[in-house]
Length: 140
Image (cartoon, rainbow, N blue to C red; front, side, top):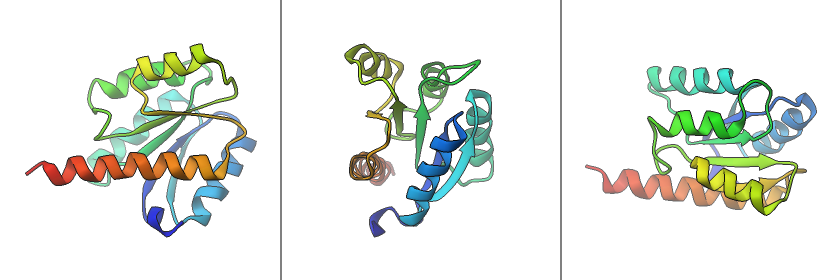
């Protein structure tokens, strides 16, 4: 998907197999992927990217991570970045309605279940990046 080429995405996932599969998929689309194995690393990666003047276009966030859940990480990120400035897409193994509600309540933009479906991931990223570009264009 050439529309995603060059997009900077942070993948926060503690399962190395899931990480490997998602990163391979994203890189096939020309996405520049950074990896975080837990919530702390995700927060640090976002801060570092900002300092370098290369902020992420979106974050793919596993919700079930050790120490700090994806929900907690999202709540912390939302204190500094609104949903359009930094789209966050929840990734979860549980397709429960309660999980979806928790994700949206925490400030996540979208919710995808694992195993990740390439088409749905692509659509979610395109929607998130489209909204982000529109909000940036509106800001003088």
